[in-house]
Length: 334
Image 1 (cartoon, helix red, strand yellow):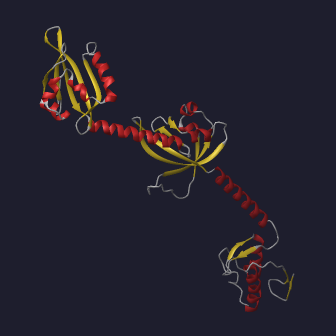
Image 2 (image 1 turned 30 degrees about the vertical axis):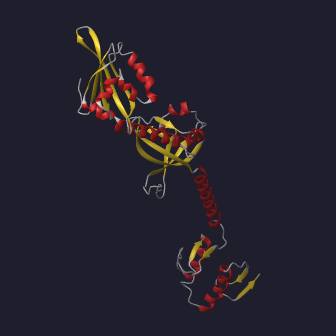
Image 3 (image 1 turned 90 degrees about the vertical axis):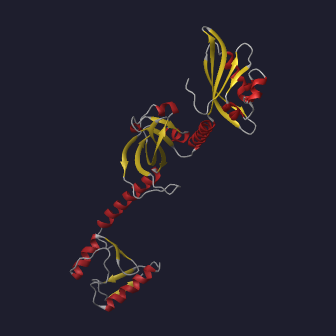
């Protein structure tokens, strides 16, 4: 038996239960005198924590069937509660005669408190994971198998927990979407943010962003994923692009001259008809960003058109009929 420098040792007569040996570390650990251990049989039981006493007594009653018993339990000392690892063994003074019960006690308070703290932390983390309103899951980096999933993800994707945990990440994740910019989390870090097309149980498609963080989970290298549904945003963007492309097609397939300017008279947009007309008048090409008056030398014409532009830029709605070839013989305002 390997004894550590902080091991407390005692021995008792099996028949009488009387303590026959203790070392100094036992008194240090229990913070009592050696004499107190010699006063009554199985004296150390007096210092076992009440919540652990029944289990200790039960294992002690089975010592003959299991001569090398280990028990982790608490003891109550004069000023604190400590966790100990208690190794019990039956020894014999003569061959075949087991008549000495010995105990070796190691103080494991620091380790046990760390384990309890970690267990509480994991319980809290597990609770927060389960109750988070955002879909969350954990998957194995090597096998891609889902290891854990919360209720929000089950509702989002339509699976039962058993069904979801039987899947791999590629069973729900298809093509990656291009994303602009990065998101920062509450700690100021920049997590790995990606956009994906995902498949739900009913085969419908949703668009999501995923924020992933590497973790260790049950001894496995894993990743925890937070999912945000951006389906409406993507579909609205697609519809807006479709509408813009259709509007552009309509505008560029009319003979009407269509253009727009900013407050500095710079072109914001123009259609093909206006581009062709401007080129025929000034024999130059005009582009978005150019000043509408860049090729006009006649100040009268400039001032004439500025009057209408200023009215339009102020929000006024009006109609003019120009009997002109971009010059100004007559203007009829309607």
